[in-house]
Image (cartoon, rainbow, N blue to C red):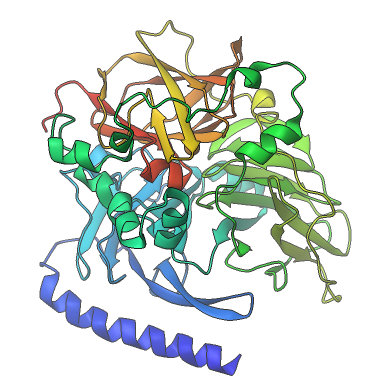
Length: 512
Ligand SMILES: [Cu+2]
């Protein structure tokens, strides 16, 4: 342990010294409010399976990972890049002007080591998160919570507990992507950063870099797999699980950066009233949240309030968040667990009323089923969209395969895509149809959408920013086009995104 602390201290010292020198060179004088939050992208050391590993951090001077704002507080933030690499941070689920969204458009490129950016917008309340949108940095934990409290939550006076989930490998992200695609790690690195290269679909240099282009056509067939059987009623769930879950075999799963062998223990009072804010920040893993002996009420999905849904076990797709209210019934220790779909592996935190010995929690006895839309079907927004006929409907097919490893929207592979155009004031609906054997958690930047149909059955569902589209199903979304700009729409499985599964919603009249 001592050696770990020493290493961590040395690392911090080194980064800080180098950082000050770099800042002196790069930072222009800028007038900013003294209340701006200072956040630094840098490196830190954590311990995973008894090994010290270097990962990224997004932290404030006091060491706090991420940002928590009180009611009414504006998102004024000074982000300094001391990570040693170009980076850009996306405020996932927030609705800022598009140039503050943190996506590597040509107009807003990643910024260099030593450089800083200032952000200033009105945030929306709830449980959000932030992550790098450059390359595969998200896999190396360039991620953090972004919590915007609202006044009614303060009045409820519940103890707030954030649980952020990750998947972790001792291999580098480039090695993981290389393992999936058959490329070299260097080629994987170029593949992962080509998202910065979008300019025009007719640019031949971009087409040459597209993973889809290696297939020789833009509507890649399903790799010879016979998809017809996927529609057969009564198909055994187990057979689809073998085909479709967990592209990457991880070494560990983290909850607030720790494994279940050494979990975070949060002190609570018997009879205490809690608000769990659970964030799936994993790059390529989905979880079942398991409250064990406790019963909870889901009251928000992706930060947006829903009518309460009670239960003990809830699916959580990549990038999604759940707010769950829990009352601690008595003295004792209680595990809040997250089990990986298709696996026995799990992670989690412990809430405890006493210093009582906490016995070690092992992997689950049985593998968890695939994460699904069983909860989605039960969710209803507290603040639904006003009923209205759509002005514009886009049907988007989701396709792809493990071999060759590439994923597409409407047969197109980012960055070689045709933007989906829209106009301010339109009600837009998107029909997502998944023709592949994997589930895809689809995320729209800059807008909150409502889930309005699952498999053709209309619902008045949750308002949120990320929705899961399970294999061979359809999901319909609706949103109001009220935030002009360029907006990414992509699968939040990091490896699907960087091998093509991303497109752009572009408002008419945006200057390129
Ligand atoms: Cu996907």
